[in-house]
Structures are given as structure tokens and as C-alpha cells.
Length: 165
Length: 416
Image 1: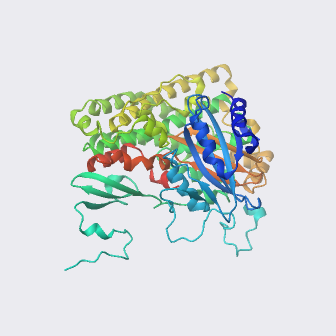
Image 2: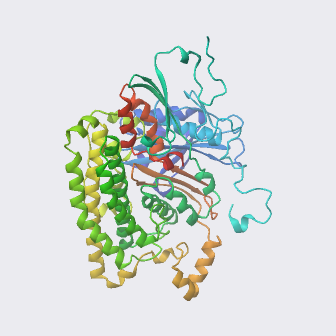
């Protein structure tokens, strides 16, 4: 099992819909349209050759500069039999961050999706219990988004050049 | 008289809760039997657990957000506080993530030293977890006994990095200083006494009728459900899946070592206990092998004795203080690293290590600055703690307690 075979099987099935193919540090990475995330995962799960049946990690990233696709949900899947991983991403607009939930396929997605919702506000459609997990329920913003600075924004003595981002 | 349920209370009881036949029990968040900040709101019928709702986030400290404004070397202390029973593994995992990002290759001696540190902390982690299972089944003696050995391990850490629990051990590219002769002496004295202690520990518990009756069949999980719930580490292996990051994706030269992966069959508390005991023997053997390999390297290349970091990591490895005060280059590098004038390369990297309780992953996105653009910790116990309600459903309340301690859920890692 190599990255080329996985890529071949996926392009055979989904054609041009999967984009941004890359292999940073040997890990096959690609993007799928947001509404296809479950189809891709189900295919990777069911296919007797690919057998990606372990959801290692699910998280979100905020890219404020990517207009129309500010939020990115990242899945790390693992084929334990052949010991190979892959990463795939879906991008959604921040005004309507709807992504289908993976809880039907993976029970472990439940809390990871709640975490992504809690910190980034990704709306996982069909999630059984999409409430905040780490922060208090009364919180009315999504703290990991880039507009919330860690440092007090009124301070002038700490600039980014000397004190990091 | 009609009793009104409290409406402003934080624990929201349902309207019918006053008429129901079952009891709502609030276990935690600071219950002495939960060993950490865990709250479970349980619905119990007599002693049987019908449903439990875990609450997480009591000690959430926003590490992922903080990390976005910290230079790489300042994130290491944050990783200490994830699984604080085995913080050196977290530290090493983080260093290896940056080394992978930068493409650094470490000398063999440094990698073996890292293996020693990681296996020592695995032993410390498993000693705590297994002896706490014994405490929760009513046997306090093994706990007080094996803690002496955790103490010895912490003394070794102290000798190497100066601190015990939250170690901040090592640097990008190697270690902050070479291992002192005293640390090797302490390591050898630990290795001499360790097998006797572990044998005694096993003799006390493994075939103890009371212990077996309490543990066998408590909180089981099938291999299929465990995989679906994202289990990793000893808990997954207890369910019968031989997945170990050290073997499937070796890092830090683990491929040079010869060791077994102990596995269980039904994934109950007893299996988890036995798997951890087995792993401690394997860790012991790995440490011995690593010492032999280091000896061999030092015999063949005597100049390797002083190698404790990769020379090509100059730009990222904070130099030893003695060099900073006496050598020009070291002073320059020290200044540049501390003042954040050294940028990492842009890239996206996922690296995982076999932590004390499972696959600890670091998903790092760097956009080329001095700090990560995004850093996500794959915390094993955050992921597998979700299975707790399913594992204890229809079991006894006392089984739920030992299931929680046998899962080795660490509050710091759960809440990050």
C-alpha cells in the first residue's frame, strides 16, 4: 500500500472533485468539497483494499485570508493493517460552516467534533449532542478563531516583531 | 405538598426526576476515588449504573491557543502538563515533531538516551496507574511500595533536567546537557532493584483471588468498539489489538530494539492491568538494550561520549549555558533563539509517539514564523474517555470506579 495507490483509487472513484493533492513529510493530503466528506470517509472505510478504519484525529483550522472558505476541518485517518495514514481537509465558509458529522461512522468523532465546534464554531450537521465541551456553555464566541488575540490588544509595548505573533 | 425542582441550579434535573425510582448521583469533580478532576452525573438503580454523563473541561487551560503565541522552545513546558504522569514522553514527542518539521537527524546516542527517558517515564506512568487500580480495589500497600520506585525514576529525571514531575526535559535537537555519571549510577541502581519489586508487585496482585474477582469482567470493551472509539495504547492492546506506535511507525530508533507488545483478550480492568505490567517488563528490557547500545557506541567511538545533541541543530538547539558565556557562536545562537529571530520552515506535520496511555499526536501547521500557526494535540485519553459511559453501563458503581482508574485518564491531558 503506497500513497500512489490510494491516490489512484480515490481519483478513480471521485475524479476531479478531490483537489490540493500533496505529500508533506510523506503523509498523503488532499481536500474534498465539504458536502462530500462523509462519502470520502465511507469509501475509505468500506473499500477492502484501502481499509482506513481508524479516525486518529479530527480538528479545525481558521484561515481568515481564504475568503469564502475560512474554516478548515482536518481529518487524520489511519489504516492500521498496512500502517499508513492520510489526511484530508474540507473547507467551509465562516458564515455557514456546515459539515456533516462523522459520528455515525466513528463513535470517537463525537467529542472531537464538539471540540471543533467549541473552539471554531464548525456546525456538524446531524451531530447527536453538539454543545460546548471545554468552555462554559454561556460563552458566546469561538475562542480559537484568529480574530481573538491572546495578548491584550490594547498593549502597545509588546509588538509582534519581538514577542511573536 | 409539591416540591419544586431547582431551576437555577447548574445540574439540570428533569421535571420527572422527583417521581423517578432511580437515584441521580453526582460523582466528582473532586472525589477522592476519581484521582483527578472528573465529574460524572450518574443515574443509578441501587448499585447498578444505568447511565452516566461525564463532564470535561474543569482544568482546561487553552494550551492550543497559548501555543500560537509561543516560540517552539516555550511550548515544551505546555506539553509537560498534558499527561503529567509521563511528561518526558510528551516533551520528546514535541521535540521530535519540530525535528521532523526541520528535517533534523539525531545521532544514535541521543536517540537511545531519549528511549531510556521515555521508557523510564512509561514505567513511572504504569506504576502509578496499576497501583491505583490496587488502591481502588482495597489494597493500599502496593501503592505505597511502588511509589518508592517512581521516586527513584524521578530522581533520575532530576539528575538530568533538574525537575521531577513537569520535566521540560530535552531540547530541539537533543538534550540540554549530557547525562551526568550520577544519573547513570542512579539508573543502574534502579535497574538492579526494579525486577525484584515488580515481581513482588505481581505476586501480590496478579493471582490474588480478591483482586481477580474484583477486576475480571469489570468495564470490558470489545476490540471492534475500542477501535471505533479511537482507543490507543494499553487500553486498545488490552482489547486484543496489537497496535503500538513504537512498532508500526518507529521513531527515535525504536526499530533497533527487540521487544514484545503484550495484549489482552476481553479488554476488562484485569486485562488492562496485565498489559501494563507486561509493558513494564518490556520497558525494562528496552532500557537495558539501550544502555548496551550506548556502551557499544562509546567503546567504538570514544568521542561520542560527549554527544548529546545534533551538531546540525545549532540554529534551534539552545546551547549550554557554559558555552553561552565563553563562546561567541553559542552566545549568538542563544540570543537569536531566545529573541525569536530564527524562523521555522513553513510546513504541515503530524507526528505521534506512544505515550503513557496511547498515541500522543502533534499536528503542527507552521507558516514560517517563530510560533506555530496552529498546533493541535491528539490527546489519547480525551478520545477514549468518551467510551466510559458505554463501558460502565449496567455494571456496579464500584466497577465504574476501577474502570475509570484502569483507563488511566489523566485530567491534564483530557482537558488540555
